[in-house]
Image (cartoon, rainbow, N blue to C red; front, side, top):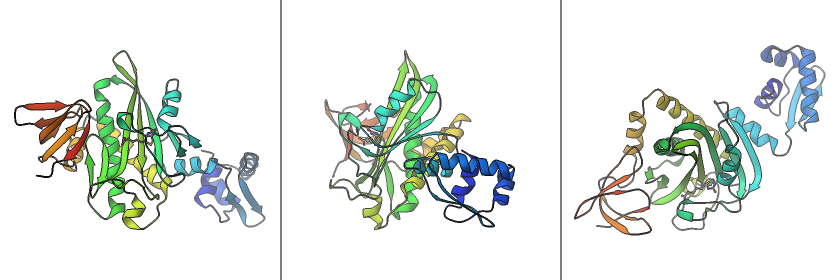
Length: 313
Ligand code: BTN
């Protein structure tokens, strides 16, 4: 990010002296002035008053979202924002075919949001979070679920302190509060033969909306407060890349155990609808590949995908 813009953004709305910016950014005062001119040409509204310095008062349309996200992010990601798009997962897949950098695709409105198992995903314009993270990889496809685990755990860790209640992860990768869905994750892959080339982690979180579905909940309906979506998004990505760092050091078991400890229904009687059949039994475990292990009356079943429900008895 432009070093002068970074300082102006940190102090948005107040005057910062040219001297202070030049010292902190390591630039001459003439260079600071040139940066300000360039930023103004890009549409940034910057006041310049003698003896007071510079004040950023407006950001170019759309640009401010990306700048704000980048400001709160601790990792060097590429940020892409569109006010509306069909689906951020589709958009991410198109770009990640030819792109080599970890990138975030964020929108305020999806008109064809995709959920798991061919379902639709609805979010309220400008009120919820809908983004996809594209990660270039070169690994065996069997590792994809570990990234889904890390994303679900990141969302969990960030949302937990905001809700004041129990948050759980529901297999395969939903976030639930008091039996209602707060977040869904759709993981898709770009592969070449058996190699995972790019992973697309699409995340939808109900933040400031009032969901119409009775089985859904938002942060706002839970707490009666409004939240800053951009700060939450940046914090989820910070947490995710912290976990990826731990994973890169060969320590996945700690992540897996934390994720497993907040799983809904483990050890209980559950029903899984796979679309082809319904499996009922005790939910024994989920392995690191995301396969659910169910003890039925007859046998132990391995279930690769489906919808999980807690049985009443
Ligand atoms: C599910 O629970 O079925 C998964 C929902 C995933 C929704 C998100 S919103 C951002 C990204 N773009 C999409 O089209 N879907 C995912």
